[in-house]
Structure formats: structure tokens, C-alpha cells
Length: 336
Image (cartoon, rainbow, N blue to C red; front, top):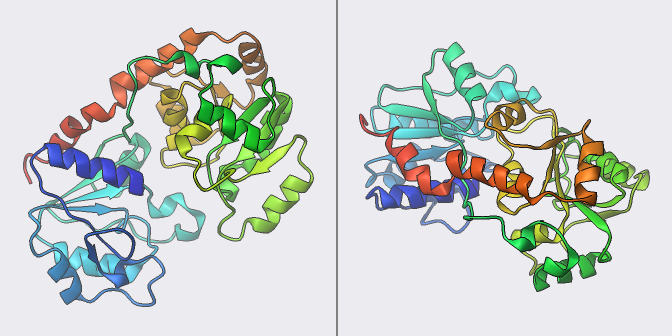
């Protein structure tokens, strides 16, 4: 979410807005501790109004979407009443089992609601809130370089170093799941997919929300070699993508699922799970591999067709390019 917020700030800058950031913690311009997810108490009205005093437009990133800090959401909504604002919804309450009974986000005639998928837009409409879909955006290279279509000799030095650190040999297959470990991330299915491909399974993120014991159980019974976490603090996400042979996103639910497009921009085939928004994204024309389509992926890995990667890249360039984000945002703003 923070990554997408940064992309929006950059895009708003190209539209002529001078931007500043307000949050409960982190490297931001204005810190209001009560905005943090784990704050013991929400911010005061005076704190929020002071933080937003100079703003002509306020972009609210998910704060009024998921009720993770309801007191902060109420205070921010009250402070923004009658003011131009964009509520950027990455998740909605009823999309998470523990928030099923929570009401929809607040609304105001001066606000615009933006969702990251059509599913959420339709669900808001059913609850009387009009929204516009602006899909997450990505830096799409002009072509898939040779280093992105497989082959030991074509890997970058950094990617080879990552594989060496993981203990992955030159001819070994490596499946990367670049997510945290949560129930909805379906880590077990990722391990099974890696096993069917004769690969090592690499889970990049940590266990969260009490999922640690389940992850330990899955690792203990894994049908394939498993690596957990990055091989060192200096290893960046780009090098992780370049080091792997396949990206796995076996989730049962994602609001978007950025690894789906990041696999494309890094020139990697994708194994994708059955989450609803995956079908929505695939409908643009991506050629991805389902969890029930691993035989086809196994054959592709044995004899890679760079054309598949190039076609996926063309779809990403047409519909999800970061270059087009300012125009997509501008379409939301005219009457604010």
C-alpha cells in the first residue's frame, strides 16, 4: 500500500500538486501518532486539522477503508467533511472475515472514492457509494531483456549471487512467493506447486497474524526444499525476482496482488491462485499459469518461449503502466 501511495504522490506532482505526507509513524513529513494502526488512542480533531490545514486536496490511503484504527478514521472523516478528498480503497471491511459486520466507508459530496479493482467498485455501488477504478500501476520496461527469459548465462551478477546464497545451483529451479505468510496467501499451495515443478520454494516474507505455528508445520512437512526470507539485508526485491525462475501467487484473496504484475515486468512466468481479482486482471489478456496448469508450465520451463513474456509485457504496458497513472488520476479530479 505504501508503494502505491508513493506512486500516486509522484503522479500528483506531475499534475502540478505540491505534496506532503501525514501518517502515524515512518519517514513522513508530518507525524500524528494517533493515526498509527496500533495507536492506543486516535488523534484529536485539532491534531488532524492542523496537519491538513494547508492542503487543497487530501488523499486518504485505506484509513477509512479497513477499520484497523476506527477512532482515527472517524476523526479524519469529520475533519474532511465538505473538503476535497480522494479515498483510495485497497481493501473493504466485508472482504476480510473479521470485519464482515462493519459498515461501508464514510461518504461526502466533496469526496471521490477510488478502488483498485472493479469488484470493489461494484460492491461499493451496491452500498450506495459511487467509485472509480484506478488499477495499481507499474514501471513497465520497453521490452523483456534477455536476462529475463531464463538461462544461466543471462542472469545478472546480483541474481547469481542471490541464488548462490540460497544454495540454488545453476540448473536448479527456484519458485519465489514474494509475500508474507498468512492464511489467505495459501503458502501450502505454493509449496505443492514448487514440488510439482521439481523446484525449491522460496517464501520471501515473514509470518504474521499468528500464522507462525502453521508455517512451521508446513515447512516441516514440505514436499520440496524450502527457503524462508531474503538471504541478506542488502538484497533488493528486484534481485529476488531476477534470481527466481517462477513467481507464485497462490492466494485465495488479494485486493490486487502486485506480484502478479511484478512477475510480468521482471519477465517471469506466474503461477496464480484462485482469488477473484486474479480473474479480473487475467481478463486483460495475460497468459498466466493456474495451480491446475502446472504441466503446461513445466513444459514451458523446459523449453521457454520468450513470446509469452513479451505478450504479457505488452498487456501490462497498455493497461497498467506507471506512465499512464497521472492521466488516470486526473480523470478522477476535475470536479473536485
